[in-house]
Image (cartoon, rainbow, N blue to C red; front, top):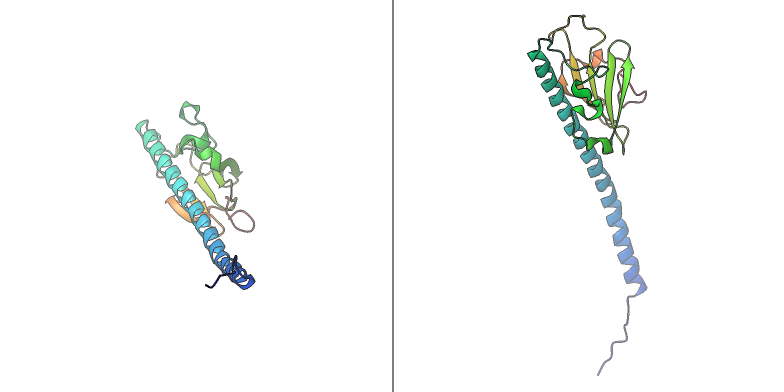
Length: 177
């Protein structure tokens, strides 16, 4: 009767297993990081689409009173709602940092930056500074865009062009267009 004296793994078996795990990790980690980045971009795109829909709805509501203007991020909103969550779900507050800034040729700009990746942002711009005192929807332009280090300008809705956004927030080296 033969007895098997092996009670464990040999050193070479352990080294091979560790090498395989290392190879799998070098393949999996970059793929995981890419999928996380893709999910963050998708989140920004969804937020931008939601803000765009809210802006259009607000403009339609104001047209019922005869004004027909897009909401101004520097102005008051109906019911004194906060700009941060006026056109978005309140849960956005936890994942996104909201701020406003003043751009000389445009006026106040609303900006949501992803808390976990500050290079991803959603921006709402309306040409409040350049519009006539008795502006109409035809004279007022707006844009909702998404900006990331991968793509500095992704237009979600509106008719302001990138060329008209000088001084507005962007995810490039100097942080603006």
